[in-house]
Image (tube, rainbow, N blue to C red; front, side, top):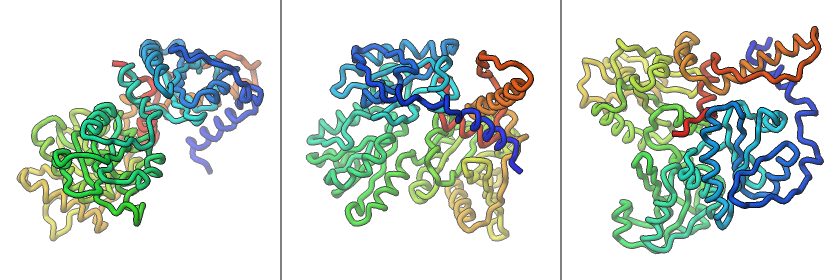
Length: 454
């Protein structure tokens, strides 16, 4: 028997997959001319598919007229559109009233406002970048840039890094042939900048801390992190791809609504450290130790969160104000996590780093013990309970929550329609609802639809 959540999702799937929800062949094949004049295009259902097939790169804002966040985003898009239209490879910005043209919205799984999607050669990709005009322009320039930039001088390297900004990790192949990374650069273009430096000085080698070539240097400007990969490059591309995939995230990821989205496509388990306040000096010192551990354990993602900064999230893992922190657990990213059980030969409470019986200088060895215990299987498997997530559900309204409530409303509407004449009135999106643990995180992964513009 299907659980209630599966029944609801199955029901709404049947409702949405009616023939009328699909674009007509006529609309898809329609070829209209659109002027690239630096203004945001207003699209309708009748010309939407013609527009995305006309332009190689288009950012589409799916909005609702009543949405306050959409209204604040609109002038930022107006400013960005004028700049992006002047690029050698222009990026067009368009918007669609998803409330009015619900079939288009349904086709592209729009479940919150505003939702931004980038259409590259007609293929949509969710946009998770900044929404201020200047930062949005810098972010979108990446998608029309060469797959691999060729850098021929020290100044070109500096200019490339400056222009790349802080939204993506940057890979620079010093003394590396473009062919060595070209395929992977195409594959991961949406997530990182790629370049090869052909001419550079010894001063540059010293600055980026590598002593031989070829070397692939990875920069995370937002986190002030850098790592180096010396190969192999040509013999086994798997090693190179593993390094690139693992380097898409910083060594120690601070957990918040924005960074949770970065975990969407990463299948590694997450070593989560919960501290009292991520901004205090002790926590900063601990993060340095976590980075060192991450460097030696690239098969895991290392992350940290402050109880003070995100109490509801931390309490989901049986953490309370009275508990001594830091605490380490291994999280699967959904509803299961593991703590490490203490053995007689390991008397220290390895689950809790900041115990009164452990001096702060012992934290490094505590991390090592924790990881060793996890890899040896000395773990206690736990499941996040609904009670643990009550506060999280009340404070972080996610897209999954909205979907569930909409499904309920749709089911109720269908049932009522059996007794009453169907109405064409649309149901307003709810402003709050409850979400299961996995849905709450999936909503955070998908991005905050009602994005803050400031």
